[in-house]
Image (cartoon, rainbow, N blue to C red; front, side, top):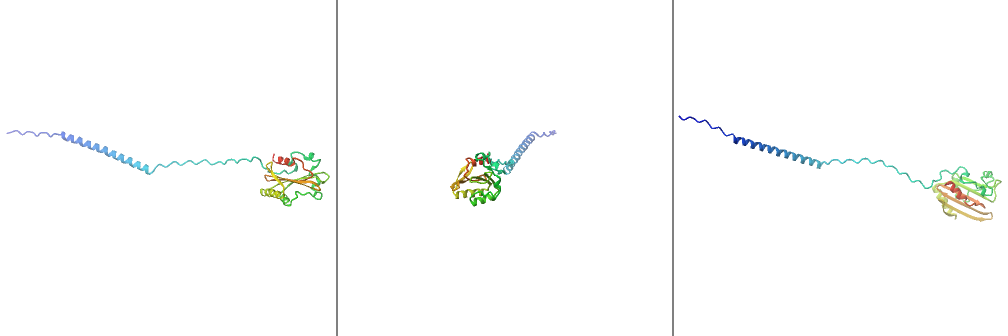
Amino acid sequence: MTATQPPKPRLRRPVLWISIAAGLVLAFGAVAAGYAVGAASSSSEAAEVAADPPARPEPEASAPSVALPEAEPSEEPVSVIPAECTGIYSSDWSTQLDGYVLNPAWTADPDRNSAIDLTDDELNAIVQAGDPLRCQWGHESGGSDRSLRTVVVAVTAEQSAAVLARLQTLGFSCYEELGGTRCVSEESDDNGTLGESHFVREGVWIATRWMNMAPDGYTHDIVNTLWP
């Protein structure tokens, strides 16, 4: 009787290689899947960035503007006309007026002083509408054929224009002088020589009426005293 041969053992090597191959396939698959997921995530983030760009920082609030100081005028306008006549002169003019004095007592008496401010009614109306400072030079004993009377009064821009227009209409000679406008007139009659001098500047009107007494530099001294 022939002896039965034991079965040959099955070869396991092919199975091993198959397992290894399957593992490699799975590993490569996982890597590829991870790459795909990463790429998709990157693409999604890029799309979100493109669709919703980052907000720009808002500009800081600008500093509050500071008003620049206004340029100061080259000359200070007269703010207050002196309360006393002595305040419009730089010195005592009596020495140059043959002993005549400023505002002698009789000038305050209307019965003895018939002098008017100016000869024109329209100009007189403007003077009387304000609060004029009246300064009259005369002899202590009373009136004579010589007189010098100055009125200083504040005027508006409209009044200043009206004064200058009226003086030109009356035939006064007007010209620019000492930062303002000067208008003068002179005539002669049986009583001698008489005239008027007017100066308008920055809301102040200086009006002088004289007869046989016109000292040189008189108006200039007043102007240079009020606008030093």
